[in-house]
Amino acid sequence: MMKKSEFSDPFQKVRLDQGHSQVNDQNDPVTMLLRLADVRKCAKNWQTFTSAAQPGRIVVPSEVNIREVRQIPFELDPPLHTKYRDLVEEWFKRPQHPEYEAQLVAIVNTIIEQALTKERFEVVEDFALPLQSKALTLLLNIPQAAADTWIKWGVHVFRSEETALDGDKAAILYDYIDEQIEQAIATPSDDLYTLLLNAEVDGKKLTKEEIKGVMILTFAGGRDTIINYVTNTLAYLAEHPAALERLKNEPKIAGRVVEELVRYFSPLTHIGRVVTEDTHVCEHAIKADSRVSLCWASANRDASVFKEPNKIDLDRKRNPHVAFGFGHHKCLGAHHARQIMKVLLLALANKVRAIEIQDAKENIEEWGQFERKVGFDRLEVRFLGR
Image (tube, rainbow, N blue to C red; front, side):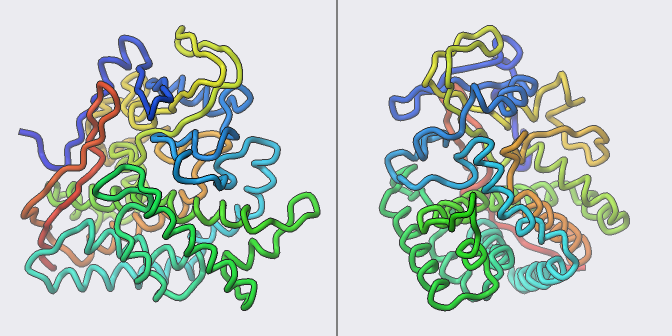
């Protein structure tokens, strides 16, 4: 019987036999690329595999029906992508600064200490979501109280219980961002909104729509991915208490553990590109204006690169995973996500001696012939303090 924290690899056979598969996405078919070499090659070749398609089309599932705003710099290609990324690159590196880390430590410690007072609690809604939301206030450099609003939105920004793409729910985020931009115009501060309002590309100020595009990406890009990452990590530590002890006794391994866990869990299954010309990938013909997906989750289990890829190895030395993307579109929020996880691992190791799983309901994604576990809809646990 599989442990709760074991995530099987549904792509293994097809990755070996063909290297690609097909999935229908709202009558706009997608060719899924499954091998690490192909994923990396296509991620670097923006001329043939563009991100600058119709807004929302490179996302899988497509968001063309719920937004017209282009997410920036995510849905741009060089050289324009580089210009917009350069505006925010240093801002998104702030999680590496000691003062940022200290504030994050305080947030994480408070959430863990609250959890320790409870007989049991639900990780997704009551631990991972508040942690993700409160940490995001640091990234935006705004008061922590703003997180209360975001927590009410739930785990998914664009998804509800009824539908995978909920336009009404997405509108809540869009309207919120519009309000925050207007507030920053009226009352400038030292937050990300004000930085963007003062920024220029090619001598021109960013439009409100461009600022909105950056902010939608910031809110949506690191929400359910971080929540899955946190939740899955707690499930792993519950079933592998020796890992908690190692982290307590060897805190220097935390960075390596962060990389191995994100490789194994791959919180984002894949992201798309649109093909600009007829081409071939792994001997498979792909027509211009069709879609491909770079399947990070499959690439991260490629046995031609990773020894024993279906095993979490806390001592893995070579780990060229693509869980944070690859090439010029590598995740802007990767520094933030890594710092959250490093701080969380070390705080848990110091404060918690064991985690007991009480109940769990898995979150399964369906992609054509593949069923992939990405995390949990519900995970109830109990913390036992040191």
